[in-house]
Length: 628
Image 1: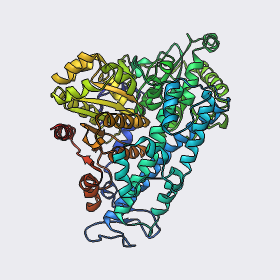
Image 2: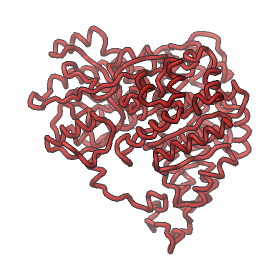
Image 3: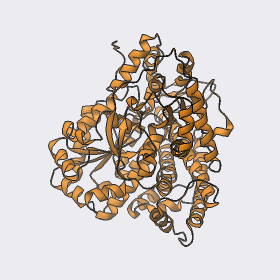
Image 4: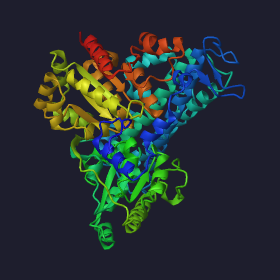
């Protein structure tokens, strides 16, 4: 059944949409986008304000200022800062959860243990902490240190930045006054600034956004990424399959969904034990399978020790309704974030047996029970995991015999597990082969792509076209976030991808190193891993990061935490492409600052272009300029 508005390269999603349509269900992402119709022009440009009861106000030619007197630049900058602050709060919520887990490990109360002691010693030593004693003692010192960092006031610079950032960057940030304190007080200050009639200077508002990007970036992206490596193990090469077709109707099926992998990792490991496999068999199933969804899955499949408990990756955040609609999923464990509100309506409307179970204190859906005893607690995690598995088994028993389970057959092989250590291993111990390939023109450079997926141009369509263009132009891509699932499903992350998509130079390099043309770097939070790689490469070459032949890209950013990724990248001196065009272009001065003048301050700027081919060409030209 054709659908002229179901724009996506994802064949399984098209098939599932056709299946739903045949049953008369027309309430998916696709239909909701169609019903919304045209987008508000003023909101899209950042030229509307709803902050006070005198509004809403719209900045336009005959009314160039709001009722309070704010102009388009101040309004666009203030609106953006509000979004940045929300994104930083979301990322540092992950950090706070990680901090609680560290404390429980230090006290010997958590099932988690140190998996990468070398990284623990490196991280603690880099921060000037005592590295003598047991793992738990070092973890305790690290937790105390990070908690103090989180709570620092604005005039107390983050030690994380002093210890980890390149000196050349620190000097630039000092000169701009953007070295931040802990996120709690940075966020508090920003929240006050975006009230009406407080801060309407677009330059100061932009600098405040940069402070938030650095504070959240070093605490949440960088520190949290390193800690997850310490506990779960550092990335190493893994293989598996992605797409809705990984589901198996004969098993109790659990999907671990979201961005925070702590609960998902315990559930996946527990579900594989003989105890729960036997309970599932006694309920009539062949056993239990656990699948990753969006960033929780990406986190777990990056590391051999956690990947071995996963039975596949079902997709990105826009896939979730179609995964549930198969009728084969018994429990969706929903941690923070990307728990789509439409999921509850779909499950209820189709009378599915599927249980939607929030496992994070911040995840709530209308008409879905949120039990406090299922909210992740690092001390009680094993007990919670066992109860969650039993919930899935009980749901399996209630599968409706009248609902025809429909699972698309498609699934694609992927290679994952790329991080600093595993990339260096592939390169033979040093990054020299990569730099030589760039210098001799074999490849143009590297794009670090961290992105969500949106419905702006169809589900994943823009990223698909954009990545194809980059590969064709001999540009190596490191990918993270929901875009990783798209890359896996579409075959960018396996050995066939280099034959089908890569240009001749990139193909030659990938064949020589036996790698795919797109290297899976994990979850959206793993922007921190990319940042550490950039820092390490700049130190290896003895140059500022802005000199590296690297561009960052978010071709379909959606959630506000993606803004933190972009601000961190630009602050590090990496030109950053974003799409869709952010709601800033209504402020001409603010737009000029971010897309042009920022390069004079930070050595990098934001790049915008709504056409995928032109965007790839723009990035290619930028990489060539860096090398020449």
